[in-house]
Image 1 (cartoon, rainbow, N blue to C red):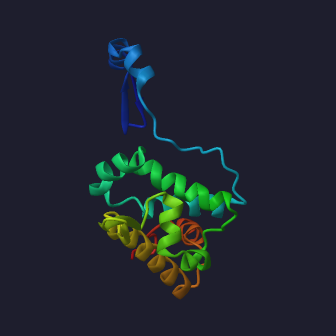
Image 2: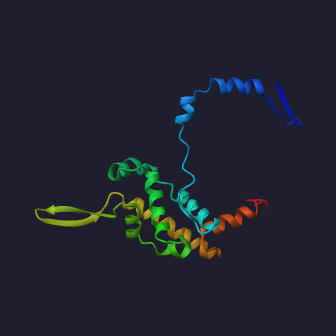
Image 3: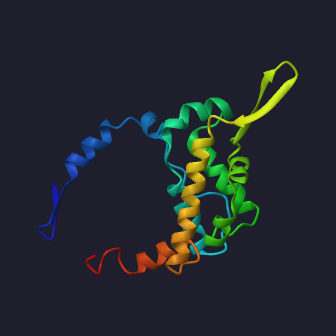
Length: 176
């Protein structure tokens, strides 16, 4: 039997039943769903949207994944997530002003990825040198600085405020 919804959509119940019968329960049970709801309390919707928008803004540099996972023992996306959770738990609002204040060193500490490393240059002589991951940390830092600057130029306190303001306008409803 089929159902016709206003001539736009036709639902074939027999096809749905056939699809459901062929689905393996074990495969469905093992399917991993992306992490969405975190056990965090946000002050308001803007703070929550801000958190996830920043997480997505920093979701680049996957070419570093294997190296970072080997060094930290955690997947790349976890490194970013835990770093932002750390900032959130410290009470940082993660707004434009707070982003402007984050130093490359502090970012490395938050992400647990060192910006420098100590190497032995001669017996009993050690020197600090840039860590292999410093370029990635500097790209993250530059991204946060650029976001902060652009938000302040446009009069937004946070990325969350920008996203909510744009979503209330229907993202491109004006034809831009």
